[in-house]
View (cartoon, rainbow, N blue to C red):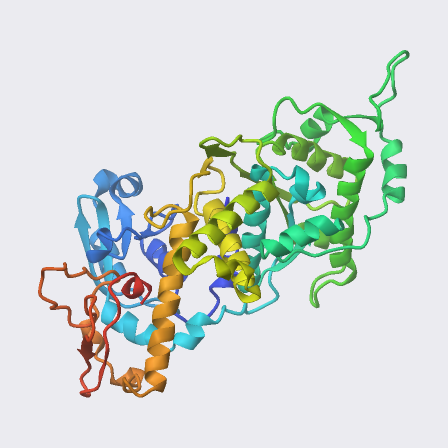
Length: 499
């Protein structure tokens, strides 16, 4: 789901003069001729030693007769050019498919020579698309927030940040009015809009009451239910049965359901009243230009489908494009019950982080206000890593075991190593200020021909240090540049992977 969202926004995201994976993939697929895209960017460390992009053999067999790639395609790929497209070193058939490697020396030189432009998010050439991100889990109180709902909240927050960084206009719904939920989101470093009160439902209620199915004689509705709406006929009428649960039939309309729908309507109305320049200010234009993405837990999906249909039923100006990003279930391995709430989970990770720090530096740190803030940041980062490191649709298995820096899958392991890297950077900075090392040479004086691989092999502890550009762990180590300037070698643990 996330992949297709970003692919749909690719023309806006990648509309720059910088080198970009999107531009290269587009050019490669165009070189193969009409048809579905087949190329993908290689990410596996072992394969990156010999290739940067791959067109799988089976995909080529489906595209070309007998899987034989025409000679003119090889020539087109080898001479690949265009805005944002890196120069090609070689393109050759392999048992896995068509393998392509870029001229990495040229790529390194071009990227490292303009690091600032790559570190700054690309600005779209024109007004970006609109996206309404709706997270129903935020309607409940934090004490009732399940772990699967917490996962949906963190996925929505992460997706909003990523889309905004690439020029997409994002509006978050619902605004949080519960002060306890606001406090909990602040602990998690989740930036979400707030409101003083709920959106009024008076106008919407009047419209819905006219659409309700009449109650049969002797039938009693459950407490708090205003009435019933039949959605199956609407689903068939609109032709929106694909992807919807076949059991979606009647919808019991409640005040809470109307409140959720009123907040969605208010968000779309906000865009209609303050539309972009150049966009036709008509209801149809707003409905066509705005995509609604409901980020829901697997338990909330069925109810959200009913809400979609209800919105189309009672609002002629409802956005035409509504998609669901369904987050998989979250389970806990160990002694704790899967009924653990989100605040309890936060307290567990926070306590473990404090305990680990106390064992390392002493118990007095827990009382230090500065370290209290640090513990909060590390706890939130640990939870986000654990919740976001697995594909959103997949089941997530958490552990309640004591904190450990030995495994590679725990959020604590990542935070521990990030702290080590931060210490490494800080130590180098202080050493530079003390004059222990010379100033890093200008980029144009570096010999980029020494850089060959994205992930260079690491020399073992008993092997001689023969890497031309990066040194193994130890002090002092230096690497030489062609202008004779020496700079300190980097620690073997993790730093060179970041570079």
